[in-house]
Length: 219
Image (tube, rainbow, N blue to C red):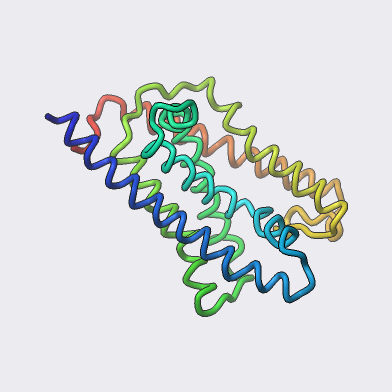
């Protein structure tokens, strides 16, 4: 009975977070793509432009992972995202999204109206909901230290992508990876520091999860 109750509650939490994440991501495309196109970008270029933000990619990852777990639990993708290792990696990514925006980028961004509302969904609401779900509903058994290097693949590939794409397009989604302004040496140092931050948060979440293994998930 306890297991059934836990599964029921976790399914509701999963559905709510997935719905909020999908809403925020879709809304961001609906309000941003037309604005990019008014500035001369093509539809495809506008979509790629928006998808070049780590915030958007991570919120999409949240939405896709939870939807896969909820609707396609027996598929390879559903089983992959159902693993505590996968869920914890995503928890790290969405935590970084929240912290970087609120501690570093917020002072430089003065969004208004629906843009501001959606910013809060992407950078505050979705991260908070996902982290609450991770802390209170997900069993932590299976978290191992050797998973840490694999969790760094996603942010590392992202950094390579934005730097290489920026070399050809001149567009860098975040100022600390702007090669035009800072040069490759400084950007490489910034990227290294970011990876260290990711690694530290990976270690923190593994440590917390292993500490919580003896506790039963909320039911």
